[in-house]
Amino acid sequence: MKKRKITNPFDVKFKPFDNYGSPIKGMSWHKVTYSKKTGQGTYILKMKPGAKSKLHKHTNFEEFLMLDGELIDLDNKIFKKGDLVTFPPGSSHSSYTKNGCLIIVFMRALNKIIKNNTKKF
Image (cartoon, rainbow, N blue to C red):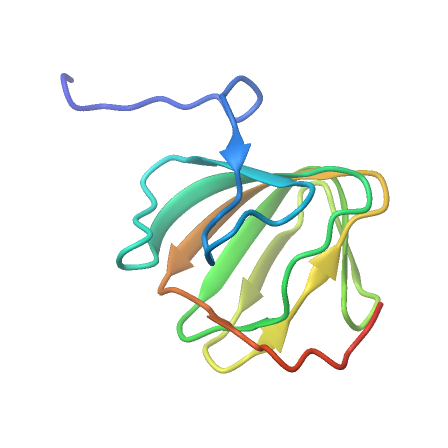
């Protein structure tokens, strides 16, 4: 098939994660099919040890598969290698990693950043 694309998530070039404007420290991504304009598609996200995502609200479903490492959500739930995590529309969260992680993310719409982030890890 001429139009097939095969991506090895463990062998890609990453760029600074700038989905919401300026890059977020310790986060980088490789866009597989993701469009910043629509917020739809798939990307591979790498978080270095100590990296934290911004608090955000999901406007549609967001799902991710943990490929390596661990990710800790705001409620202290730990996502581990092999976990497939689903956030429904209207849910909000942020996450951090102590030792780093690799995630494949499936987006259906652009998330909304929650600016008044009073929640802390």
